[in-house]
Amino acid sequence: MTRTLAPGRLVIASHNAGKVREITALLGPYGMEPVSAGALGLPEPAETGTTFAENARIKALASATAAGLPALADDSGLEVSALGGRPGVYTADWAERQWFEGPKGRDWYMAMGKVEGLLAQIGPDADRSAAFVCTLCLAWPDGETALFEGRAGGTLVWPPRGTLGFGYDPVFQPLGATLTFAEMPPAEKHAISHRAHAFAALVAALF
Image (cartoon, rainbow, N blue to C red; front, side, top):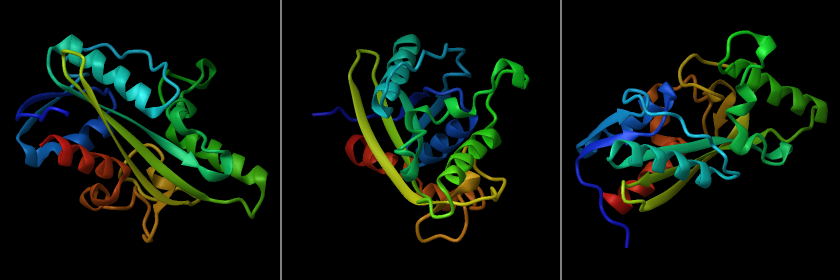
């Protein structure tokens, strides 16, 4: 049986400011004191897994071991039906700039354009359904881990809409909504996102 999580410090095993902000908001009501891996100066481990669960476990264990505290990692991405589930676990990689494209970093507009370009190659009747997937891994310093998954289905739109959110949010319109994730107030997105569904499963099991 998975142990419970007591109130106190919890490392968010991410250097992604958007993810840290969303997870911190979700943790707010549960007495946790989130601190990011970036704020602690922890190194980013190589994400060598081929699934969301493998990468989430790598990140959570690295932070829990280095900090001596429980750590929560998120590995998430966009699965596009017409692209066979791509970019999937390589969602962030699609946004990586090459050396000749300017300073090292991630260009999410480029990544969104890459997805749209591939859909355009398929043609006007391309299936535009997609899903955001999130796997959360909570790890303790002794090596125990617990995994939780959430999904949010929707449709890809073009051009991008909205300035809130991050990543592929401007082109993702969740099922039953008229706004993209990037057009929604944070509280509205947090109520229906893939991360919210995964977090609900975590809360039910651990708090």
